[in-house]
Length: 277
Image (cartoon, rainbow, N blue to C red; front, side, top):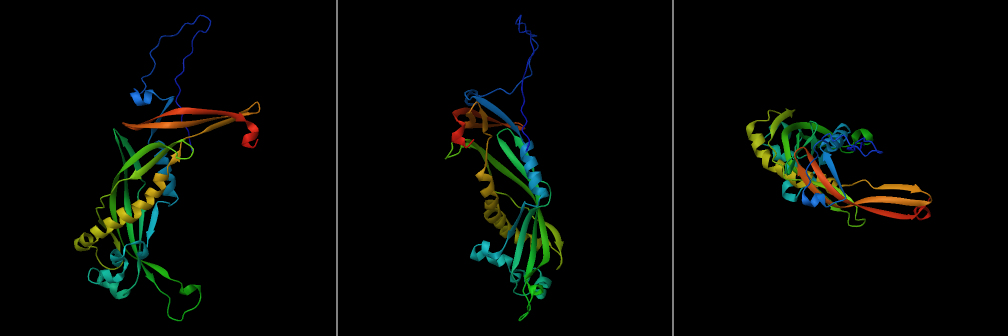
């Protein structure tokens, strides 16, 4: 984790109080809500994109959907019977089998900040696999249920992101949170082990897969995003006392290429022994 702090400093003659009078660099103009706060933070997309890079490289941006996660009427999507006429070879090889759907990022997600809006872009992969069952009466680990790849589809992913700043309900500290808006899944053919993924297959899967991505996978991602992260709290022990500074009362504004977060500082001074020192 990196914290980038920009400081505007000037060197001048302290004895004679002479200044250079050189023009300082232009800083963002603060609106009235921001100007009324003790401090203003400027946050670019960089820390968010490095976070996405970390998740992507660790394969953490992948969600497995099984039939039980879907409403009863949608569970048919993850049965080979659903593909009896769409993909006859799949049904012939594995009649009446359960399937799983893996939804994952196939390209590195990238966050873009604009005036009043934030967009998350990537390509997502939707991979179907058949769950095979052990042979009747079979024993041993070799007879465990196995997953057999069936076919995959992919789609561009462009979603609006709602970024918010609020006070933690318990501590009052400033917290950043986010939420993904609805996604329009536009399917493209991927790979298949059981026939060609033609326009009819893609058209018939478009509605169900839009439902799965928006009503099953997106809420799982939003559980993490809406939990949010706390802005830093500073604490230091000195002369037997503990000094802590928390950032509270956040105000958020989205600018071109960055977000401005105005906060107040709450300082507390207490004997160090109260903090276990």
